[in-house]
Length: 263
View (cartoon, rainbow, N blue to C red):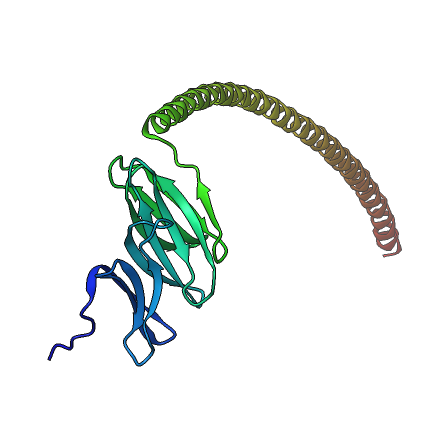
């Protein structure tokens, strides 16, 4: 079943959960900004329509780091600029002006890795104002590049990138040429080294062949000398044997001749 909460609501309702309680803010029929809760706590009049403020709109409640903040806008009458204000409803006399613009502002709060960012967009021109929300009421505006400036910077970056790309391409071609030259030098050095190694190998083979032939010749000469010496010794032994046979024959003939004379 629906439950009637307020009967004096006019516009700009917004709400947030603060300290486990739903807090809401709105403009009543008397053009006052009211802060209330869904509970037994009494409502509070935060702002009244007067010469100092003059027409409030764009009420937004935000909770940040355990504190409640109310953002609101005013101005735009008789050619005066629009202003974005912020106050801390739970603390007395804590408010400041965030920025001023030529038209009403669309407001958004974003949490980033670098902290809380407040984005304000002008409804008429579409110009964006970005603020880093650093302290409780400390807002530092970031420099926003306009479209023409952005295009100029993009063109500069593209030109710089093209120049860098051409430089890198030239360096790549130079490096490729140096690599091919080094490769040719290496190939030539490799072939020269191969020829030198082949010559050294052939020289070593020739030296080994000559040493082998010399050793073989010495062995053959030694073997022939040994054979000649053995043949000489064999001839001497054969001659001695013949002489011994002749001596033995003479002795035998002499011995048997005497035996026959005795008979």
